[in-house]
Length: 151
Image (tube, rainbow, N blue to C red; front, side, top):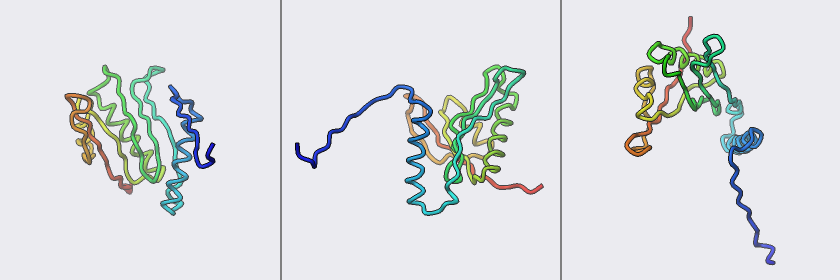
């Protein structure tokens, strides 16, 4: 066998473990930091903010902080609780936590059948779009620059 040839094995993993996901994100993050050359971009954190009524989950968010930006991966409110400003309160909590962690922006996406207008009403700007995804709908990318408000 020619030593210049390599044998590759491609493996598909369903529901990769948390440790594998963490390892892969860490590898990408370390590589990216080496290219950015600025250690102030080093902090990263994956977290959820939950809103419960007694012990019942009524709203939640998943967030990933990296490069001084907070990726709002999802924000969900129980259908029977929508229209009661719970989503607004949760998003404000996400933004507060982002500022506390040193982020200067929040970014994420929303499909047309979800709530892109909810985000734009609260100061988010549409910065991109995938038309007709999923079919018959659009996917909107949204971003909000954060400012620290003095008391």
